[in-house]
Image 1: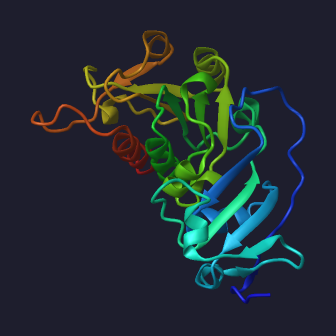
Image 2: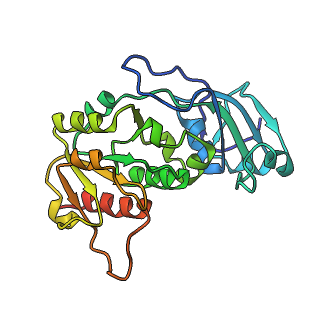
Length: 262
């Protein structure tokens, strides 16, 4: 068994029980790659692992030991390249595992309300979703919420872009985003949508209480019905020479503002 550090990496774990269906798109197995994504998945007790393909250098890069009997297969770099998307930076590690178990909005609304919730309306680029997960983890967000029909499924691309945050930040998929925003309001959240055409700046609109940050897709922005379910629309004060920011960058700035408000 290869020595990979101090912590014990967990293997199979039971799925979460209870709650209503949330409409998750991803079922069955997913393949994750890259050291941060794979290591975070191995450490996540909510993951059920099927198999890890790894080079010797890949195993040595992990900061823990695989448990006895863990399904591990030694592989060469060329072997791993055939298991993942073309030119994917696997760093000598490819993990096949079950998709994460469903989470439900009530689970995160019942949690610590001082932490923001990130709501994504039709943000479909997996790189942007992964980057937003990473920012959500960095600024202690309670969850991200997406509508199942307008969001990418769980994938290796998202996990790699999230750099481990896919295993940290709860991802709630709902059937109706407007109804979910109503539930957030009932739970005491102030719903702020980022919109370049808004009159108020984000700092002016930012309240003292719990915040649900609503982000729309690049170009089209939030849908009208979603914007109507926000308590306020606000803009980031960027230079007039730039029309807009990438949605993941805008989300990171807004989450920083929430985390550092007086």
